[in-house]
Amino acid sequence: RGTCAQVLAHYGSPTADAGKAPLKEALKTADPSDKRQIIWALVELKDASIFDVAMDSYKAGELTTVLRLEGGRAFDPVKVAKLVSLSQLAGRAGDASAAIRQLVATILSETPDKKFTDVLIKLVQDKEIVVAREAASGLGRIGDEKARGPLVEALKKADKDSRLKFLQALRDGIGGEGLVLALDTVKTEPEATNWFQMRQLFDMIHMLADPRIGDSLVAWVEKTKPFIHWETEAGVALAEVGDARGAKYLGKRMLKSNK
Image (tube, rainbow, N blue to C red; front, side, top):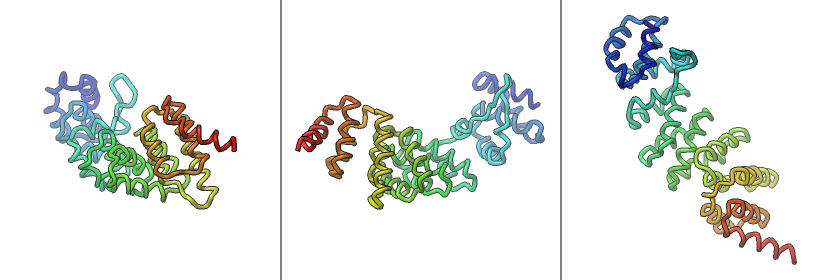
């Protein structure tokens, strides 16, 4: 029965949709030798009724060992999550399992919607950093003040290792704009920490060279009036992506050097 379930999962929907009813019937008497394959076959056939069972099996660590018919791991948590609406998935944000909370944060952050801002705020404050950093990406993409505040606070409170993971999540999820957002979270004291965090962010900005960074970086400079060194770094970052607005900041540094 387990092998038959693997075959049906291999063909997938809609080709093997006729197998849904027999799979559900077989699940009633399934044991550890075939249960996980049957559940996964129903996931592959996009049967929404298996969502709760599949999530429970995922939490128990059973689905992660399911193999494809041709070999190799079959399990993909995103396929389970997409069996239901985002609203239904968001209802799992308070699940006891960190893996489930991380999955919720990941999916909600992929296509962020303001109606899920409160859920993502809850998740960015999660005690598990793997959950919080996934939610950070979604809040950064939403970008309004309600979303930005908790994200900035989470970054301010993060220790050195956790902060780097947040920054990487913002970089990978939003790009350069996410790193510019993080500039507002840099500690002003002690001076050594301030310098380290600013250097870390600008190194990431230079390495990424995101051409979309212009508006947000210029706005940051004009708003915060940073120390001339960091203003120059901003000018260099703008020049690296071909944004002519960087010339203003580079010119100011040249004039200062001449004096």
